Length: 110
Picture 1 (cartoon, rainbow, N blue to C red):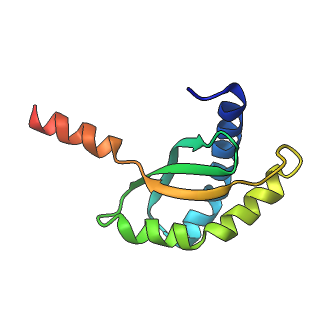
Picture 2 (picture 1 turned 180 degrees about the vertical axis):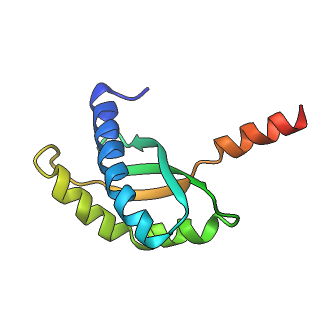
């Protein structure tokens, strides 16, 4: 169970990174749609895990690796936006959210 502070920080990070992704993903992956579906923050607020949905691309591994390689750049941009609201800018980890693929597979099987 996440604390209220963890939930607030997670919502803040999701909103701000969503804005950053909106601009940068157009540049990095034209024609692809990448959204942040969920953010989990550790109890000490030092690590933020972002779960991403990747649409309009057949192979989802290269964009995910590209996003991970730009992690420090995203952390810097995020830090500029939320520096007055949190003490420490968390380390960013990116994972693929395959829940939509799972739902699609279940519907196809039924």
